[in-house]
Image (cartoon, rainbow, N blue to C red):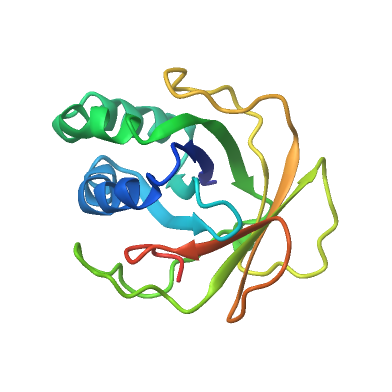
Length: 189
């Protein structure tokens, strides 16, 4: 079963677009070359200093191998200082698994190329509830806390919560919790 990281970064004021440009140019393809899938990168529509992104792995062992390869590799070493300079906090990370195999997020179409500027005219909604929660509509994805131990402790994950996370998509702004606008290279569009 797959493992998903829901990563929410608190950024220095006015630095989000700097991180997005660097991330889309340098970190998407290089992470995927190491064995992970970058499913989506987003601007939080309600917080201009938050960057949210989703990264998927086949399993916890694959997560460990992929993260070790990326964070000891040349792309991260070359650009980590520039990325870290945009961030106040990058430790708000939920480690999740699909509630059922069919509730896994599925990308739509091929990833736009490096340099793409057109964003999708949709809003991705993310609702996070404490504990198990009955969700009537699966939307585009439904996840729960992955209870396995973090196999890559150099990147902390939150262990203080047990949550259900719902992902949905709409053509109009609205909704509650996280409202995310996909970046130009986001696979969730």
